[in-house]
Each structure stands twice: as C-alpha cells, then as structure tokens.
Image 1 (cartoon, rainbow, N blue to C red):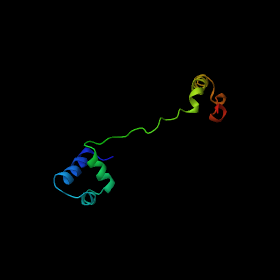
Image 2: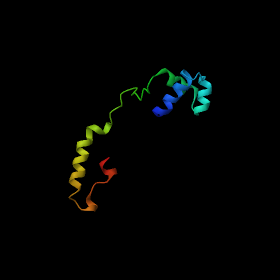
Image 3: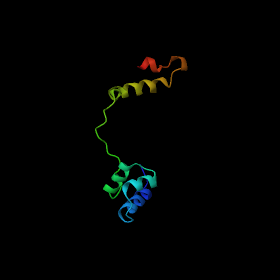
Image 4: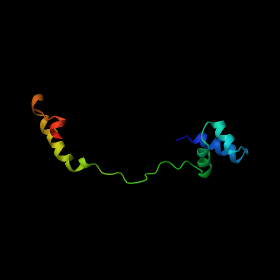
Length: 87
C-alpha cells in the first residue's frame, strides 16, 4: 500500500496540474489502475476482509494439548510428549 504523501501527490498532479493518468503512472512509477483507484477515493480505503476466516480444526483440542504440555513440564526430558505423539 502506498503512503499518503504519494497518494496526495498523484491526486494533485492529475486533478489540479492537469497531468493525464498515463503520464502520472509513468512519472510516479505505479500502474495506471493504481492511479485510477487513487483518484476514485479521497483517502486510501485500506484492507477489507472479503470472507470470514475459517476456524482452525485445532480449536476443539487446544485445551487438551495445553494440559498435556503443562503436565510435561514437571516430567524428565525423555518422558515428555513429542509433537508426533500429541498429534
């Protein structure tokens, strides 16, 4: 994402100074589509989550695994559970 400074410089060059979008893209080293988006919004719109993130399958078992790891802290090193064993 580009900073606000370049965002405003591109908007000023095209809207006030009369520079074409294509020339502005070349001058600032960005794509023409990016220049169009910069002109469309007065401030950068930021990122938006398109879809809800899926929950991990591990969530159901997290408490169980955490308990195993807590119990293993008191045991000798050779008797602790390995990742493969917990899986």
